[in-house]
Length: 168
Image (cartoon, rainbow, N blue to C red):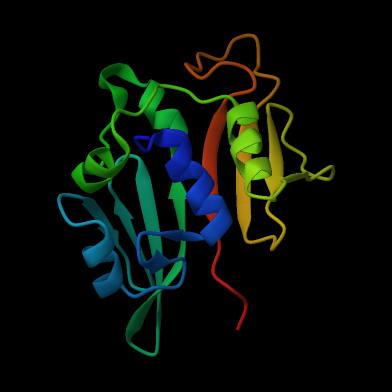
């Protein structure tokens, strides 16, 4: 069976990694996990690497960069042209669909013995937030878009998956 986009998303939720990189990995580890072109936004104490589908965040502490999280920006795949997917991910998971319903992710996770919990206190009217058992992974889903919004992700579609570093 060939791996698919939902396999990647499920793996990120289950293992809290992307390849060998974790949310708190160094830039060198991320360069190995996601080789290739990226946009770099560097500030004095903050750095963001944008690969299109994936964004990685770093914080500088004591002159050293360390990871402060990463996000799979699923909604970008619905943009014109499908949004850029790093070649290594396309090679491993094939073509990525423009949207993925939350139900497909929850089914995949259930097959692995995991479930997501909706965060009832999340206060965004357009989106719902679901967390992994560890609480370090948040899945955002478009649930009630504004009537004037021009989202290309359908209601119930995954917007993004964010992984936070483990607490020290």
